[in-house]
Image 1 (tube, one colour):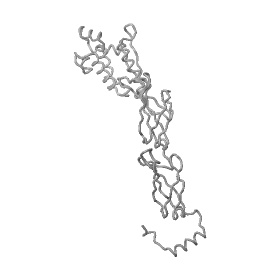
Image 2 (cartoon, one colour; image 1 turned 60 degrees about the horizontal axis):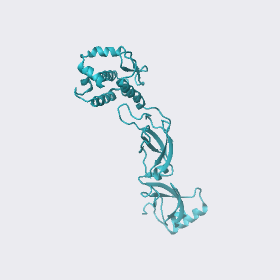
Image 3 (cartoon, helix red, strand yellow; image 1 turned 135 degrees about the horizontal axis):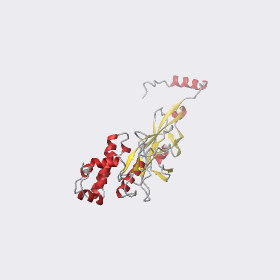
Image 4 (cartoon, helix red, strand yellow; image 1 turned 90 degrees about the horizontal axis):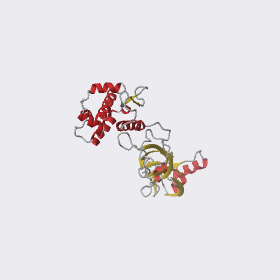
Length: 313
């Protein structure tokens, strides 16, 4: 087998092109991303062996100018403990892999070994760790994944409806132990992700996914907030000014005369700032216990002002 063909590059490819091809194939067939897949593990080893032959200018020169390598013999030697690292797991499918360096040479790490070691160690972090109830599943403490793409830390944060509508600020501790002050913009939605760029060279970007806790009193409807307000029969008939709760405190709401259960009134500016309002649905409530005097008044009123509520509009 030709190592150039194995890596999918031409014999005239540059070292950067060879390295890029190796990274791409290593990511595709890495055992950590293919748990229990023996075929992928075998291909991963073959890719490593191919890169051993042409991954550095020195090795490539020996391969191109020297005697042709018996690839099958080379593979057998690697399996018997040659100079390249190989990957293994003693815990069955899905387990994390470890690396082992075979004998031979001076026992030190050449350029290729350093690259492969870094790829492996960072891939272990790329798999992620389980977090506590506040941390998002997955994440990595490494500045780069093994294949060149920056891997952000991720965090799942629960917030109250008030913070989702009006905005807020929280300090969190990331799975890596780093503290981060999160500014929550007004009007965010459940499931929305906030990105915080790394400020230091050894830090990763952070993605914070928001989960909005349900609220028994208020409901979100786009940029508006909805709630229900109970009022008495006299307030419904005569009108009144009553306090109504909002997400940032109570305000007085003017109840017009003659309202019914289900009437909706609008409180301006009490939804998402500069965009939404609060919609208040009225619920006319009778006294809890029967009242003889109220019953007497109701009978007299019904005789004097009869009407059919089932046909009234």
